[in-house]
Image (cartoon, rainbow, N blue to C red; front, top):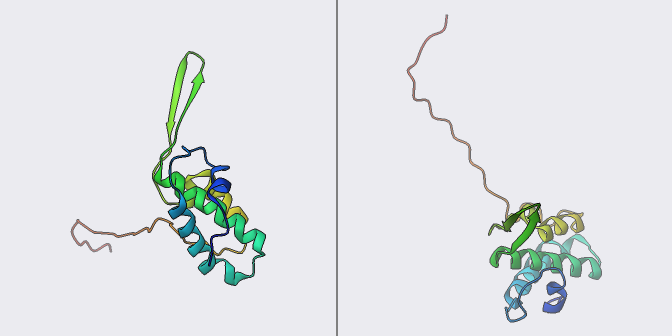
Length: 126
Protein backbone atom coordinates (compact mmCIF):
# COMPACT_ATOMS: atom_id res chain seq x y z
CA UNK A 1 0.00 0.00 0.00
CA UNK A 2 1.20 3.51 -0.73
CA UNK A 3 2.12 5.75 2.17
CA UNK A 4 -0.76 7.87 3.42
CA UNK A 5 1.42 10.86 4.35
CA UNK A 6 4.18 12.88 2.76
CA UNK A 7 7.47 14.02 4.22
CA UNK A 8 6.16 17.60 4.22
CA UNK A 9 3.19 16.58 6.37
CA UNK A 10 5.47 14.87 8.89
CA UNK A 11 7.89 17.83 8.87
CA UNK A 12 4.97 20.06 9.86
CA UNK A 13 5.04 18.24 13.22
CA UNK A 14 8.79 17.95 13.84
CA UNK A 15 11.36 20.63 13.19
CA UNK A 16 14.23 18.87 11.42
CA UNK A 17 16.64 19.79 8.64
CA UNK A 18 15.09 19.64 5.19
CA UNK A 19 18.06 17.58 3.99
CA UNK A 20 17.28 14.64 6.27
CA UNK A 21 15.53 11.80 4.44
CA UNK A 22 12.57 10.61 6.52
CA UNK A 23 10.95 8.37 3.93
CA UNK A 24 11.98 5.19 5.77
CA UNK A 25 10.17 6.36 8.93
CA UNK A 26 7.03 7.06 6.93
CA UNK A 27 7.19 3.64 5.28
CA UNK A 28 7.57 1.84 8.62
CA UNK A 29 4.73 3.87 10.14
CA UNK A 30 2.59 2.94 7.14
CA UNK A 31 3.31 -0.76 7.53
CA UNK A 32 2.50 -0.71 11.25
CA UNK A 33 -0.68 1.36 10.84
CA UNK A 34 -1.87 -0.84 7.97
CA UNK A 35 -1.29 -4.02 9.98
CA UNK A 36 -2.44 -2.87 13.42
CA UNK A 37 -4.99 -0.07 12.90
CA UNK A 38 -6.61 -0.52 9.48
CA UNK A 39 -8.41 -3.77 10.46
CA UNK A 40 -10.06 -1.95 13.39
CA UNK A 41 -12.27 0.15 11.11
CA UNK A 42 -10.70 3.60 11.29
CA UNK A 43 -11.62 6.07 8.54
CA UNK A 44 -9.03 6.97 5.90
CA UNK A 45 -8.51 10.37 7.56
CA UNK A 46 -7.94 8.76 10.97
CA UNK A 47 -5.43 6.27 9.53
CA UNK A 48 -3.58 9.13 7.85
CA UNK A 49 -3.26 11.07 11.11
CA UNK A 50 -2.16 7.99 13.05
CA UNK A 51 0.48 7.32 10.39
CA UNK A 52 1.64 10.96 10.37
CA UNK A 53 2.10 11.19 14.13
CA UNK A 54 3.70 7.74 14.37
CA UNK A 55 6.19 8.67 11.63
CA UNK A 56 6.98 11.91 13.50
CA UNK A 57 7.59 9.84 16.65
CA UNK A 58 10.03 7.60 14.76
CA UNK A 59 11.85 10.65 13.39
CA UNK A 60 12.32 12.05 16.90
CA UNK A 61 13.55 8.69 18.15
CA UNK A 62 16.26 8.62 15.49
CA UNK A 63 17.26 12.27 15.42
CA UNK A 64 17.53 13.60 18.97
CA UNK A 65 16.34 17.16 19.28
CA UNK A 66 18.03 19.81 21.38
CA UNK A 67 16.12 22.72 22.82
CA UNK A 68 17.46 25.60 24.91
CA UNK A 69 15.44 27.80 27.23
CA UNK A 70 16.46 30.82 29.23
CA UNK A 71 15.56 30.60 32.91
CA UNK A 72 16.43 33.95 34.48
CA UNK A 73 20.20 34.26 34.13
CA UNK A 74 20.68 30.57 33.35
CA UNK A 75 20.04 28.44 30.28
CA UNK A 76 18.40 25.04 30.31
CA UNK A 77 19.36 22.60 27.57
CA UNK A 78 16.97 19.74 26.85
CA UNK A 79 17.90 16.79 24.65
CA UNK A 80 15.20 14.32 23.73
CA UNK A 81 15.89 10.70 24.54
CA UNK A 82 16.45 8.13 21.80
CA UNK A 83 13.76 5.76 23.00
CA UNK A 84 10.99 4.01 21.15
CA UNK A 85 8.33 4.15 23.86
CA UNK A 86 5.37 6.14 22.58
CA UNK A 87 5.10 7.95 25.92
CA UNK A 88 8.50 9.62 25.53
CA UNK A 89 7.79 11.97 22.63
CA UNK A 90 5.00 14.44 22.05
CA UNK A 91 4.07 12.82 18.70
CA UNK A 92 4.09 9.42 20.41
CA UNK A 93 1.70 10.68 23.07
CA UNK A 94 -0.49 12.26 20.41
CA UNK A 95 -0.69 9.08 18.35
CA UNK A 96 -1.95 7.21 21.41
CA UNK A 97 -4.79 9.73 21.71
CA UNK A 98 -5.68 9.49 18.03
CA UNK A 99 -5.54 5.67 18.16
CA UNK A 100 -8.63 5.50 20.38
CA UNK A 101 -9.34 1.88 19.42
CA UNK A 102 -5.94 0.74 20.72
CA UNK A 103 -4.35 -0.69 17.59
CA UNK A 104 -0.91 0.44 18.69
CA UNK A 105 -1.26 -0.69 22.29
CA UNK A 106 1.89 -2.53 23.27
CA UNK A 107 3.94 -1.24 20.34
CA UNK A 108 7.45 -0.30 21.52
CA UNK A 109 6.56 -0.57 25.17
CA UNK A 110 9.31 -1.54 27.56
CA UNK A 111 9.37 -5.18 28.47
CA UNK A 112 9.48 -5.52 32.19
CA UNK A 113 10.83 -8.52 33.96
CA UNK A 114 10.50 -9.20 37.60
CA UNK A 115 12.65 -11.73 39.36
CA UNK A 116 13.17 -12.52 42.99
CA UNK A 117 16.23 -14.18 44.39
CA UNK A 118 16.54 -15.18 48.02
CA UNK A 119 20.08 -14.88 49.33
CA UNK A 120 19.34 -15.65 52.95
CA UNK A 121 18.97 -18.86 54.88
CA UNK A 122 15.83 -20.86 55.48
CA UNK A 123 14.24 -20.24 58.83
CA UNK A 124 11.20 -21.73 60.43
CA UNK A 125 8.88 -19.21 62.03
CA UNK A 126 6.81 -20.96 64.72
